[in-house]
Amino acid sequence: MILVSAASAWEITTKVRIGKLPGAVAVAADVAGCLASQQFESLDITVLHAQRAGRLPGVHRDPFDRMLIAQAQIEDLPFVSNDPVFDSYSVTRIW
Image: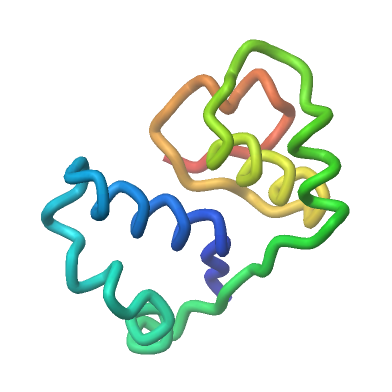
């Protein structure tokens, strides 16, 4: 099972709206449909995720990334990213 965070949907649609991700217009228009077509499942944001994201230490300030880190920690899930900044948050990073 592959989970995609609601935070990723938020980030994709935000970046499309502000012009930073023009190649993802179709995805932003129907994130749920794109997930379903790939047989991915959504990972909703809970109050516990939000609390953890707000309390995370460190200088990484991106709210989307902080939410993804919190979800990976709480749900004990590996995280797919090529950004080494996540390594300092005790999550298993793939890629």
